[in-house]
Image 1: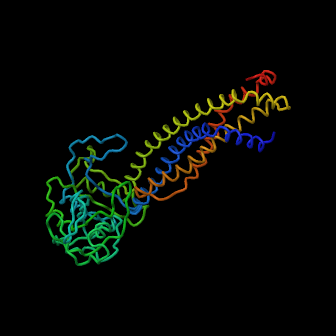
Image 2: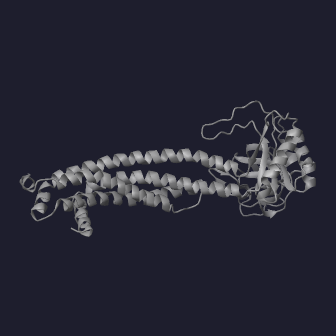
Image 3: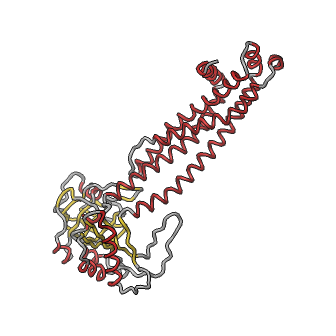
Length: 410
């Protein structure tokens, strides 16, 4: 028998045992769906993270407080009591840093604030940032409308604000926001500009933000432990290491750190956080792969049982085929092809569902729609291996049946 004839026989057998075959294919589909779906979502999320952080530029770095509570992959940095970077230190660094680069000072004044405009108000989940006139460039923001802060507005703490795209849309719908008055923390601000859409990565809303002048943030959100962030943007990526070296030396002098002691601040490149998040996601990738393999192992055992039952039920059929001249190789091929066809049906269904679900999750968290050709091919190859492993023992058992005894089987 040719491969085509074996496939026809396999399809006829599948139609004759539709319920059993459907259940087995569904188990295989669930395993492949879990594997392809989660890995597709992760690939989409990784792409979104890289895109969002690349907007900040690969030629920038931050000097920030080392005593951070952010932790990745279950590893938390031990808090050794490092003190915050105060405004005087940040301002002194900006004044003394002589490397040809753009230097900006910013502070996160509030993680969760509500912004009002007349009778409209936002949810209390907006970030309020204090920044200088260089902050937009340093943070990778652009202006959709209006203008940036002037140096005088930053110095004198004027009540002006730049709104994120989502905040503007919520408060003013399709109206022009420039010149309007909004209220933040009970203080009224004049809107002078609207930021371009920045998007979101893994739920962090880059458009749920309001930026106010640095001095204004210090006045309205006073906090003795307020920690300022210094951002340095060099002209070329090749200058990064030299700029980091000079910045490290200067800031050690400003903080009067002895040359034997370690830094009580940290320097983070613009892509470092993205790399840490992606590294953290790799643990999810391993876990999802393990879950998918366990599901497929269960499907393989179920498929093998079905094929063994099929051999028993079709003993007379096997006897007739052997009596008509079918060889042991023909019988083995018939049952092996049947096992492979069942697996591929489940695999194709699982790949389609996995792509849809994975991209759905990716789009929800701000990722892009992707066609994961690597995972598609890997999933189908995995299904082929499952079908081969599950079908080879029943196929060998069927091929070894004695034709005379098989014809007598009731």
